Length: 110
Image (tube, rainbow, N blue to C red; front, top):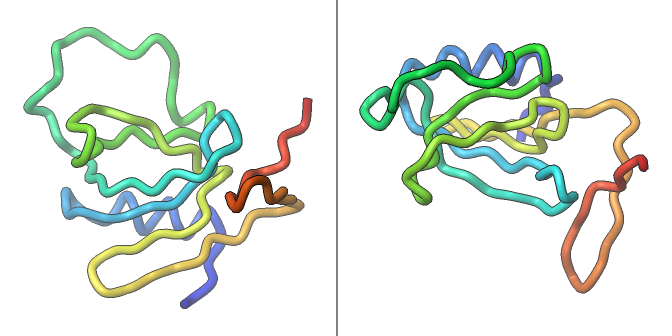
């Protein structure tokens, strides 16, 4: 598995051109999430504008193929990225993890 930084991961995601990719990332509650998604889906949009700028918060807007809804990925907590036949480990600076009940959680600063 090739190791990349978050900027390279963002570049790869932006170059998927609507193709399906898989990500593992740490959710806001600290739990690990695996998502099959793609960018550029417009079919289910209802109009209007987002309440905030995704990019300024380090978020990427995607369509979750399993939940059939729009979600955001936090680029700052991205762990792995899989596109076509390539899998990448995304390196994050100074990230700590805790193990609880057999699950991995990101240690959150409060």
